[in-house]
Every structure is written in C-alpha cells, then in structure tokens.
Image (cartoon, rainbow, N blue to C red; front, side, top):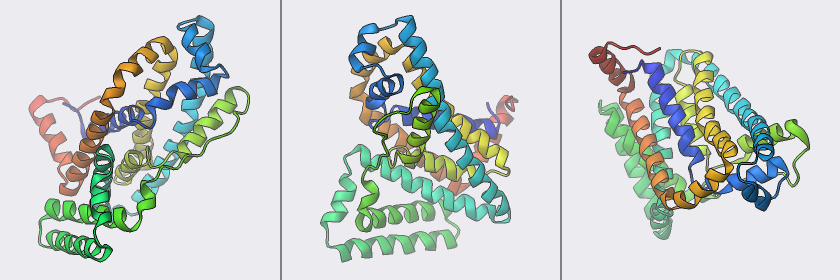
Length: 299
C-alpha cells in the first residue's frame, strides 16, 4: 500500500510514538511541562484547559520539540552521509545494522521483563556465560557464511547481547543529563530539548539508535534527514498534544500506566521485526509486493 520509503517513514514515526509512551518518558511529561512553563504541577493540573496555561505550554513545548528534533535530524544527516560514502558496502552496512537493531530489540524486550535474561547470565560463572556467547557468535558467523543470513544474523545479535549484558552491565543503567534550572524564555525551552536529545540514554537510545542505523542504509543524506524528522514527529506530536490538552493528559496517564510493559514489548517486537527484515533484505521486497497487489506507490 506504500512505497518502500513511506514504509520506512511509517516505521520511524511509530518508533517515535513508542518512545514517547515508554515507561521512562511518559511518567515524566508532567514534570517536563512544569519545568518548561515555570508553573507548578498543581497549577497545571488545577487550571485544566485554561487558555493562558494552554498557550504557554504549547509555545514552550514547540521550542522543546524543536530542540531535540534539531539534534536527531543532524544525527540522521551525519549517519546517512557516512552511509552514502560506504554505499559500495551497502549490503554489509545493512547486515550489520540489522544485527545491531535486533540486539537493541532483545535489550528492550529484556527491559520489559525487568532484565531477567541479563540477570540469568550474570548469575552464572562468567567463564561459562562468555563461552556460551562465543559459541553462539561463532554459530551465527557460520550461518552468515553458509548462506543463512537470517538465522546467522539473529544468532549473532543474541550472542552480542549476552556478551554486553554480562561484561558491560553499565549499559543497562539509565543516564540522564538534567539542568538544575531552566534558562528563561523560549530559547531556554529549546536548550532543554537539546539536552533531552543528548542525555536520555538508554531509554530512547535503543529505538533511536535503531532508526539511526536504518538511516545509515539510505542512499542519500536527505533520506536520512526525512527519516529522523519522521521519528522526531512521532516523539514530538504526542508531547504537543499533551500540552494542548493537559487536563485530558492527566486523566489519560492515570489509566495508561498499566500498559507500560505492553508498550515495551511492542517496541521490542517492532525492533526485532525491522532487524530481521534488514538482515534478510526483505523490507524492500515486502514493499514491492504491496505495490504490485495494490498498484499504489505512495505519495
């Protein structure tokens, strides 16, 4: 139903929405709204849909979204530019990107179940876990060399995740850069957005990193820019809607908290799907199949 590039943009936008709905961003939206506007949590909640509060929140939110969008789009342009230079190795870039995205999907899925997989391997003797990871990694490489890219890529991604979980557990800790006080004005809100883009890992990192790796497989820097702009829109639009309907947001948040784990699982599934499609090189094939049956190549 959509051209390959439109399928990619839809995936990027969905990734942004899932990033917003993740359990380490959505609960902090009220705090961000308070921080950006200078209004207390109680003032925002009690004022509900007051026009003055709504306009203050909207303007500051626009600059906040612009701040992190600038950083994400610049990253997309940079990664795509490098990918364009390495275009002659595009198959290798695609395969490596698919393996890394699959590994990120495993990380997000493990995070959804409270890192039980990581704890399982961490509790075993380090030599045993390392040997297991090495064995699976070698099996993955053998699969890639023998012409079984999907199986080989998935095994390689799994081995890499076990290795990282056991030997680099610090990557599972959350690292945030927070400003003690917001610089005044709209430019201050933009600076907070830039800080958000630079400092929120690994919460946004796995999904954003996957989109960046995907952008690296694009033929031009312009395609990477559009891809990251779509991701930024997916992350920014819900934030703006939350500001516009702040009263509705508080009611929505109270009822949505129970679904946080489901959001994490959906994010993991999406990353795993994209990773496997890149490894197997089926993404373009699926898009072409849809075009063939619908006759619609997108807009």
